Length: 226
Image 1 (cartoon, rainbow, N blue to C red):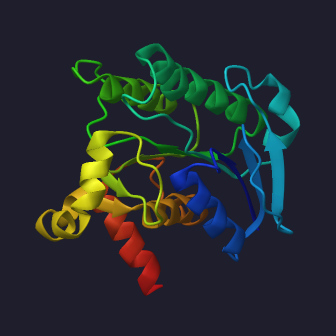
Image 2: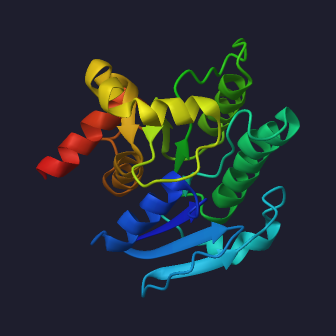
């Protein structure tokens, strides 16, 4: 039975990852680490409150003995100042990953990145540079397995307050957008399912894998067939 830790389980994708992991027959314990309470209880669930991801040194006990970590914590471009965006996107992700690797060196790491992430740092888009910086760090950190997910537009599924105008427009035109550009969309619940499934099943011996939107869709279809 796998033991999995999820950071960001109160968010959109992290919330679905938590639900799916709790229902997964191959997962025996799910540790959810976040800044807000989940408001749920489950026999498999261990909830840990941690408000400052700039320092994860206090998480040694809950991060020990994990088989995999799923990092879904993040912020939206335009919703916070650039300094805060970088802090959450880069600093928090690397600090958490460093703590996981130190406490559970055999654990796999699943990272929610984004389409266009640029590990070279040359992109004009701050989001792409920041996500790429984390990807580059993770791939060099020594994890036995690193799974990087680069979704395109993530459809929220459940109604929510959209973080910016772009997301409000995309949600409004989603039915048509999905038909015209099927490879450019992924449901939040499907993305979460893929992130959990890969941690459980692996990727046929490959230590590090970057999944673009089409790849994520293929993982979901494969999981549904099984």
